Image (cartoon, rainbow, N blue to C red; front, side, top):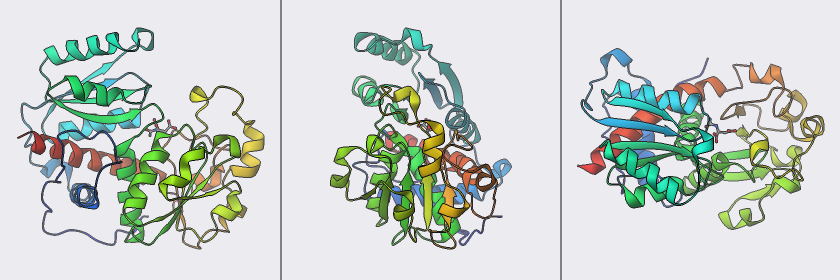
Length: 320
Ligand code: NCD
């Protein structure tokens, strides 16, 4: 069972965003991030049946140009819990062409007069392009290798609820950092909130520019997780690899897969996280994935709904 250190009694205000869009964590300040975490923390403890449906008539289009299970469903659930109408649009990969056709899609969607588009796209920058051309709000649900802002927010709240704080923690992000939008959003968020971030990856999956982001880089998992409070594992995103950088799964597990022995190098209370979908026996030993004392993987999914509620409500408020 996860310990909940703090239960808010007085509802915190609707989160304050400096924009009507949520495109990236980069550029957000501490205040914006913490206001989203506080509001979502409150939603996470609320009985869904008691939530006041303040977004009646608000139209959300969930536009996914890439497959997704948890992100799409949790945005849908979050919108519905607030009373909004949510329509899911899965766009066939074959219809994606760059440039004009994306703008054509944007214009078609805009003709339906939505209030909010939630966009997942394989190209970095697609949600920003949508926001440049459309009047409605845009929330980025993951764009290429760029960012996945709500994933980083839900990760942070999951950690805060379990460990009681974020500032001052040591957190390792381990795996295919090169291809991971989750890693990029987490690096921006965690460094903004005062975390010592350690990035661990094989040399071929470690971006050269990482050190400019204020993190420490390690090629050895055992060195990188020494005394950390949390370990975030990442999937080998072979769909974004060119071939040369792809290690064999067996070799990867040997050096970078988290098992009991490697975990013993971390802080004795360290928690394990993974944004999913996870590959047992590649990024993580199956027994650790199911170890509810250490693994927060299921809690991450649960907190995802609360974070997306706080996000939808905040962009709605910023539009007024
Ligand atoms: C991640 C994504 O799509 O970026 N998944 C998620 O949203 N929960 C990570 C991944 O695909 O490995």
